Amino acid sequence: MHKTELLSLYAYNRWANDRIRQAAQQLSTAQLLAPAPVSFGSLRGTLVHIVLAEWLWRMRCQEAISPRSFFSEEQFPTFEALQAYWHEEEEAMHAFLVGLDEEALQRDVHYTNTQGVPFETPLWQILFHIVNHGTQFRAEAAVVLSGYGHSPGDLDYIVFVREGHE
Image (cartoon, rainbow, N blue to C red; front, top):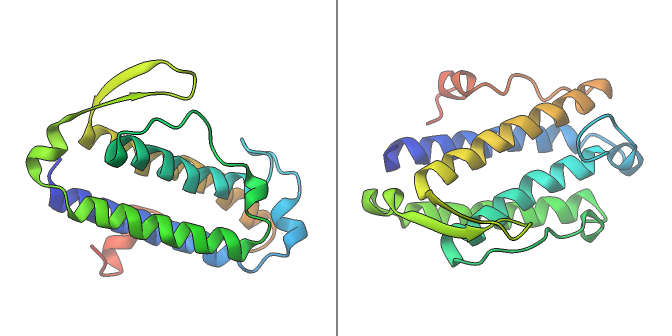
């Protein structure tokens, strides 16, 4: 994967996350916190998982730090608090990505997962994984949002491109 394609993929990631957040803004706090049949138990849990997974991987790749745990979703008592943190994380990720060169994308990242198991993976594969991971959990969030009558709409990469982004 080349830097140009990677930056496009991350622009798409941000666009898709924005669509989810815009739909989620329409919900009450009770709806955000309500139990839902998704991996992290609620819409807030799912949204927090998306951003914290991005943070965790960025820490491994940029800072060579292997956090052993995520933050608690209770650290984001309001949707506004989550939005603010997510915006900061997206800015930090963008700054990291822009600073990379083709050679850096090929280097191995040595990290330990949250269970303490060591791994070594090329940076470009981890960065690709982050977006793919977000796709899974955005889909879960979209199901919950649609159930409340606030579908985020199409989240496909091709829609992003057809809208003139890239």
